[in-house]
Length: 362
Image (cartoon, rainbow, N blue to C red; front, side):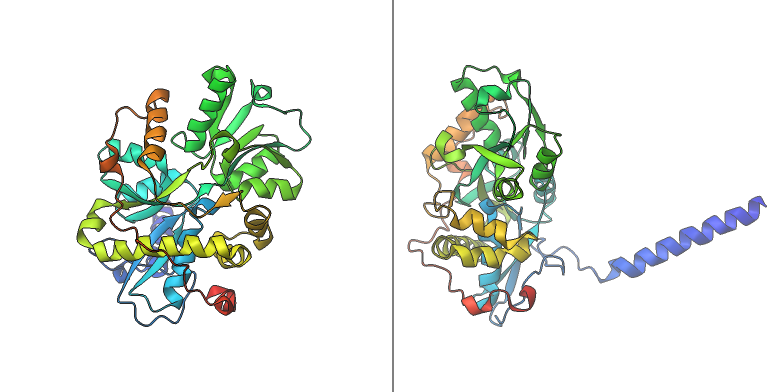
């Protein structure tokens, strides 16, 4: 009896392993390329007609409008005769992005600026090459709740995308302005897509994150804006394009194409907001209506211009991070930022509006 059971277990194990091998086919996976950024089917959202490209790069992003220029660059690279195809890879939280960057599974990604500073502090050689946006984050509370000011959040729970987010730094600055103590609000970390449902369920009392997860709560009728980031910190920065120095050294032409593409995509999105919402909806796996609301309800809600990070921008973030204890030492700004790839003249990406939405982007 015991022997029969052992045989059955062995057969079951063999079957599971065999199915896994047939499903994932590890023998077909290529060895690590020089930049460890080979595209996979999951990364390729859009397939265009660009036959000129001789190389490709996978770039990480989260489904927040702070990262919108990443999928726009992906789309543009495959519909214009550029030399590099960019495959945007969707993440849902920043810890996974960090792990992928540390392991060099990706070597370029959009990331919250303080987290890039922390990685640099810990010896991971990354540099900020461009910004993703200006403004575009809000503090959201329950629509019919009693919270009318920051002080009403005393003793309440507020969700953040990361302790190393600029949202965390800014709300602590706001608490200081209001004379509140650090422990007056309980902060928890949630992936941005989980925040609106957590607020609706009463699991949290507020959240501070990038769009479109603020607009989603508004349109669902469950949340309202308590503060716009621009009212607390004008020209607020949350995220930037972060690139590993190994890629910068080994493939500077690719980085030049990437930064140029991001810059051109930002200017295009600024001038074509409704079309940008339609373009990125399949990449974000989100309702176009929500994205359209974010991008068209007010041009001040999120902006894609003035994306060259200044020393003052970055120094103020670093100073706040050190003051709060999240950053332990000062990193010279000239080590943190690399402006060598920013084009002197920026023109909108050459996107044919008729290409948007064709066959679901494939």
